[in-house]
Image (cartoon, rainbow, N blue to C red; front, top):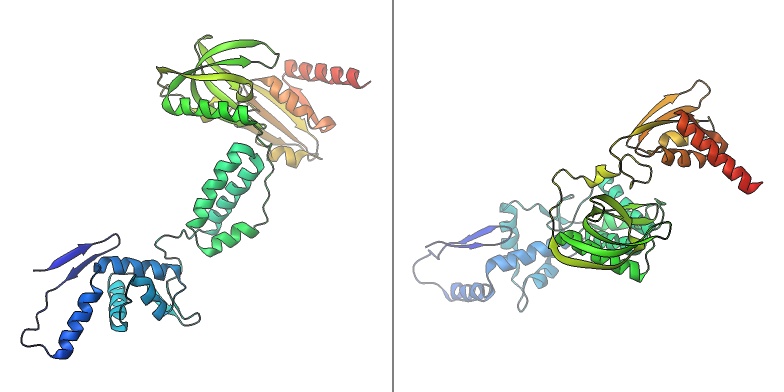
Length: 358
């Protein structure tokens, strides 16, 4: 009867001895040796051999040591195992330069072989984590380290020596805010309503009952987006203004049509939401035109290039005042040209600043 072993990577079958007749002493010794080597299932030995070849740093004799925990296989047995792997389609080869056994370039049982674009993505993720800082940096660092441990040496070297820097506003949270953030995250995952104290930007305090739908990171702060039962409407809360968060036994279902990415997409900050949008047009001088054109401030924005090298960009946003304040960041190189109420708002802000600095 044919016996078959099923392993993680392949299926192996052993046929019964069919030689017949009387065996010589040499044949008996060979049979005993094979029996000893088969003290462990053949599939286990082959999996160990695959793992050793995958590391790409062992010569023939070292492969023997990697296979047998108590007794190394014979030369003949190892050659037979290598042949089995070849027949099963594993592309191993002997590297004469290093004197080691390895798999063909681009093949690995456990390592990630990333393309140049994928390497850049991994580096970007790692640098992004460093820029954000705090809890986010720790989470991203742990993730990228796991990816690196599963990648080849080329990936590790690329990440270590890549000259790419990313600058974002660091998300800074003290221990109390981190604890609140973790409580809110846990409630969001478990779909549990939360109660908490909240202090708004004007110092007004209130108690809230909220179904947490998700979180937005913007300008160095983390915001909770959720349904406020006290206001019977959606609200956004700065997590560092939340205190005494408690998850209640009450559960909720997030609306099927809710989209966190789209919620604040029509705002500069990414956290302001309204049912309607308005258009605001800003003219940028040739000095800053290229930089202004490169900035994706709103999801919907249209650009017109001017004869003098400047640009006019029309933004569709939930709150026109966000664009007015954004434009002032460019100093005299930017001018709000439409609509009239946005232009008047810009003028009022400029006059107020002039008074303060006069």
